[in-house]
Length: 430
Image (cartoon, rainbow, N blue to C red; front, side, top):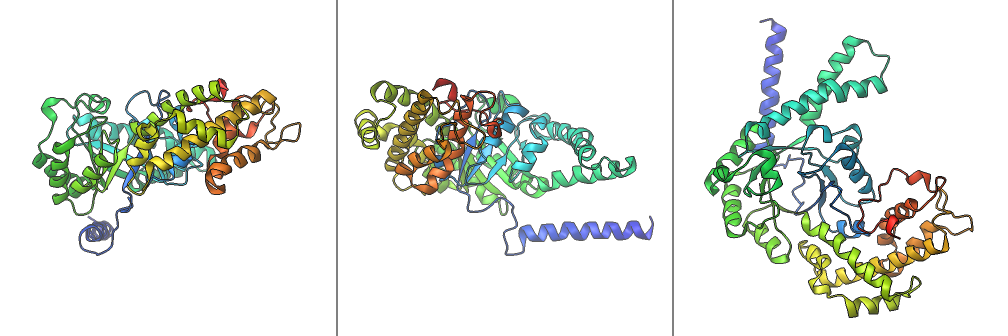
């Protein structure tokens, strides 16, 4: 061993020691996952999972948005989902379920990349996909990037940079250690988790401790995936939290009320993850706006819409109120839900009026129609009446995207890459 090799090894040990001290000794939180995240909304790129029309309003209350799913996820719909979440006023991170879901576009748009590792699945779920992902990044993703941005580099430099960039991307990512406890879920099927693989609270704690100390997992995720874990999950969370010192502990599964959210947070979860409850808002508003369109004219006033919602919508039982109730910081979820549902109906009726007037079809890439109507300002002003100017600006882009879907080949070309088929209410149904 040369003296240079010896110095390099000593530097490597020092670096590992500094990292270990930062996680266990230094009184500074070095976990890149913010400690103040308590509520995460999971947005599934699957085409069947739709977004509410005014989705930025709902998402402004959550701590962060996670993009990922276990079924029917592709690079295309993943990129489209990130594009849609551009107006969101919260951090958006990527939880890919397959290596090729990570693209140059998603990597540029995601605040964090969270790589899943299933602690009670088969070896494919723990290291197999990571190996496939590493190969994909090293042999395809990074070389394509270098060829596009630095075509003048010699081959030996490309090889060296590709090695470094691959290692850097993995070092920059966070690792998310899953304990999957619902064998009937899509996540369990993907990871080959069966009834015999379910863990006791103590076994879950042991694997979580190994994930934190050996795998360096920034996140430990107790996953019930669509099913509420109840007392069993609460006991497991409490037991796992006793063994963790640095990793964040998250819970996901069946959170659709204030009581369930509070129970999991009180049991020891640093954050709860809500997915289905958010997507149900979109399904609900599609039916709501269809009824409103039958009862109200496109030019219905704000007061007429408020009165209609008050008489025809059981807000307390709505999916909008249920989702908002899962967010502890929303003190009056029913009141907020009523305001958002009213704004949704009024905005939808206004869009229909613009379409009937032909304004959307004649819209240009600047949002200015041939007859001088500024569509972006018109839609934003309508939303401002119900929501205030700041909230109205959040939804302006998604509304223009819907109008773009109705445009001819020359219309709103600057928004052509914004997909409208992810909305339960889409331009095609105007």
